[in-house]
Length: 390
Image (cartoon, rainbow, N blue to C red; front, top):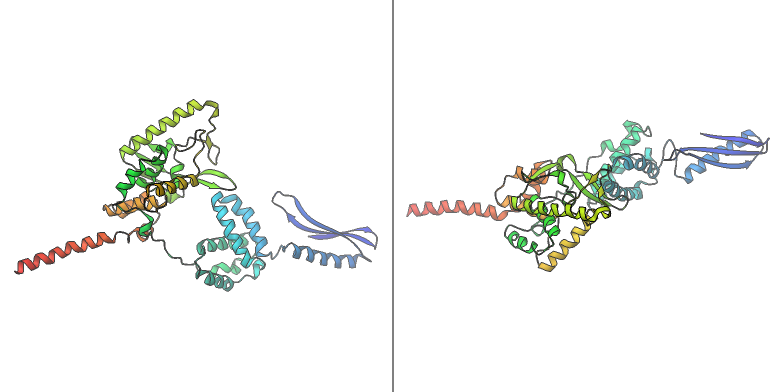
């Protein structure tokens, strides 16, 4: 809403342009003093001033630019609803989208314009799914917040871009013949490093899931770990323990010998806490609850995820092992179970995949040698038949 106030009759006026409220609830207002002869001229200058203000700020209440509305979307939705690590990823991708759509008015962006954008991006396969999800959410809230009509939502006619499914290549995991040598070499690691790696290898856990382990998720009698949290690191929020997605919430059974070793390490951590006394800082989750992390420093703080990557990379080079990343231990777990004849459905549950198609697509191709062995088995039948003919 815009208005003017007469300061000197038929000579001087103050113009006001109201731009709503900022995130803290404070009024956003622009003012200007003009000299003119009469109210009619003042009203005309007000319209000109209002247009200049909105253009300079890329703001138009009825039809904001993509840049402006994307900012509103991020502050009023993403900041409130998304996890810290997700927000950081979205911020980066959103900046890329702004470069392309930024100056376009939100109501003027067409379905074909978005389709054409994805057609161009598809050749480079640059985070297509993430870009699609962000655009879909932005225009969804543009409808909910009455900026555009539902019938004019340009995303309705845009199909979700298909992306190439991930397949685990042979150089991304240790095969079953390499694992005995790997386990022997792992004994050269410090105890906490060995346990971190062994839990990832034997259970298929991700790095953040291992680092989030606390005694309340471990059943020492059944040798099971309830995987329901993950340690995440972000520039804005630092280290945070967050709940895993529903599909990743799972129970994983471990070898008894490993669990005995883990329990001993846990008891040593408890003793260290007692020794540290007031120096023990501890760690709290996102809800402010105290969490006793099994893998952390002498002050009770969890190890950073990147520190795990660093010690693992050094270990691989020092022991002259195959150049497999720490995440490759998860793939190694799945491939080993598969090579030993474990049912794919069991592997799916251990990894926390929602859909067995994901597991099949990632791992079904990696045991081609087993398929050759199967073929050799049938060859024996043909050889036996030939012997009978003689």
